[in-house]
Length: 179
Image (cartoon, rainbow, N blue to C red; front, side, top):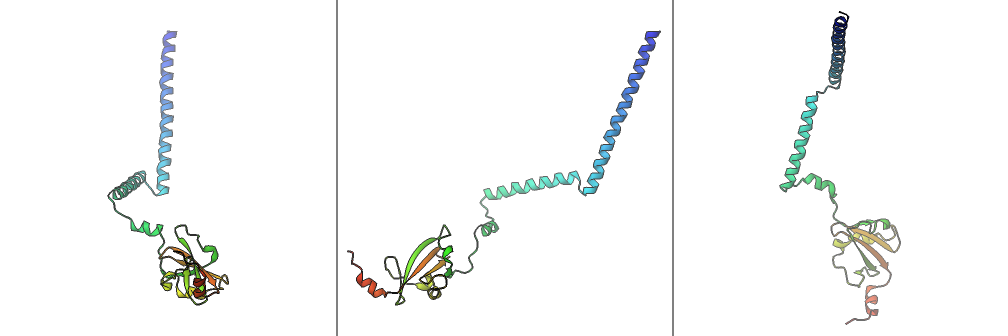
C-alpha cells in the first residue's frame, strides 16, 4: 500500500509539475508574440512588407545587371563621371594650375615683340584664336610679367606663353640653318 501510494503520488506530482511548466512556457510565448505585434504597429511596417521590399530591391539589381549585359548605357552616369565643358574657348589660368590635369598636354610657346606667336622650334602658330585666343595675349602681367598660362579644353592642352622682347625676324636670322 505504501509503495502504491508513493507511485500514485509521484505520477500526480509529475503531471501537475508538467502542466504547470507548460502553462508558464505558453504564457511566455504569448507575451513575446504580443510585444512583437505591438512593435510592428509602432514601426508602421509589417514583416511581409519588408520581405516584399527586399525582393523588389533584388529584382531591380538583377534587372540592372541584365541591362548592362545587353549593352544598354546609362547616360546619366556618364555625365556624372566626366564634367561637361561649357566654354570651349581657351582661357587664362593661374600658374599653379598649369599642368595639373594629367590628361592635358603641356606646350611652351613664345610671344615676340612683333606680335608673332611661335612654338619651341620657332614655327609660327597659324590659328592663334583657336589655340590660345587673342585675349590671352593681352594678359601678361596678370599673374606674372613675362608669362601667361592658357588652358584649351577642346584641345586638352595647357599652354605656357613666354614673352620675348626681341623681334621674331631677328631671332630667325641668328638661328643656324640645319639641313
